[in-house]
Length: 67
Image (tube, rainbow, N blue to C red; front, top):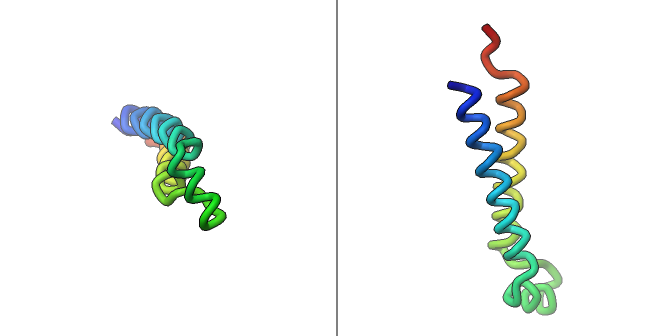
């Protein structure tokens, strides 16, 4: 059960990272970078959530229940 959840977290994290990269390179993020000097909040949120989910999945696989 832990392995399935960990794999789902890794897959979900990679998907979030993909969409975060797309949002990072979008026109609205470019406009935000010009005005504020940083990318849009949506891009940052997706990238951070993707990293956290992927790391949680890898940790679950590495330290999951060992029987």
